[in-house]
Amino acid sequence: MTRRAAIPALALVVGVAAGGVSAQTPPPTARASFERGLAALEADRYAEAVLSLEASYRARPVPVVLFNLALAYRGVGRYRDAVDAFERYLADPATAGDTARAAAVQQEIRDLRAALASLDLALDPPSASIRVDGRPRVFPGDRLSLDPGAHVLEFTAEGRLPHREELSLDPGETARLSVRLDPAPAAYPSHLAMEDTAGAAPPDHAPGAPGHAVWGTGAWVGASVAVAAGLTAAGLWIDGSVQASRYDARCRTAPAAGDCRSAFDSTQSTLNDRAVAVNIAWGVAALGLLVVAVDVVSGLLADDSHPARSLAAGAGVGVGVGAGRGEVTVRW
Image (cartoon, rainbow, N blue to C red; front, top):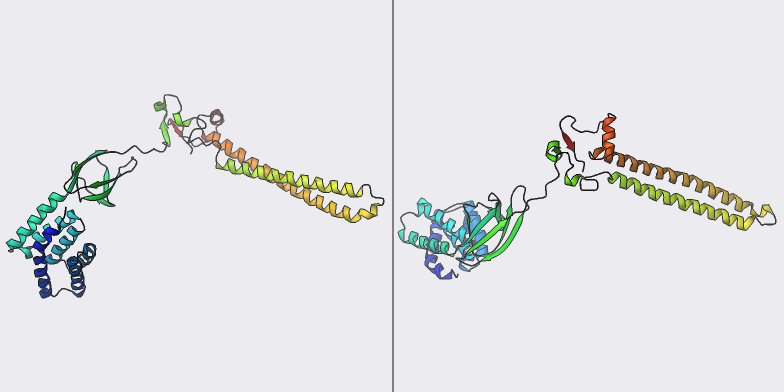
């Protein structure tokens, strides 16, 4: 829909209004922004006009600025905002009495309303919130009024996955859209009534299922440390054996033991160092295995379905369960 045809009929109002603003002697900021907005509006630079006229109206909210701002909104295709600005212009007492101008503005409002697109929405759930082009919108009934053109609609609701739709509407078009927000995957509840399960463990509570933490992060770290330390110890031991073999090959068959004295001292020192390092590495590996054992046992005790938990409970071990309340705790 081309709106240029309606602009000349209202351009005279812009000129008259400009003179009115000069007579009112507005603040310098408001006046400068207003004049920049008028210049941009007359040059069809509507986006620039919107920015300048909005700044002028914030500095001094007078009807003449509101009128020209409505023209700028219309130029950038923001028909809903243009209608709102025109209606506020007409509602201002300062504009009363000029019936010809009011009639022209009312006709413009009717034309703009006719150009708006409509979107019939069927929402599940009906209470979902809507954002249109990043701005929240109140959704009365089942119809949404939109400017023609491209839009991005975002739907959200508590307990549901968000949904996004992109669409393009022609002037005056009525489109229909059905949106169902899928339930969001809920975190497993921390407490479940025993009577609800009828004596059986929940489906996701079986060993190996999500939420079952028998083999946790600590166990993985401990196992990694144990493997690394064990490999290091084995490597040091092999290196020491190689050093000893080299000494044997060089000196065991030598004619005089004194010829290999320095080699013996060097080899003996190296082997001593290797022995200390091997012992340290094995100690670290043992510590890693201990971490694995502790983490696995903790996971078993936290798993209510595991026999170890029953044994611990029978032995009087406190595991953080609401005893006597029919509750179990799921450890993630």
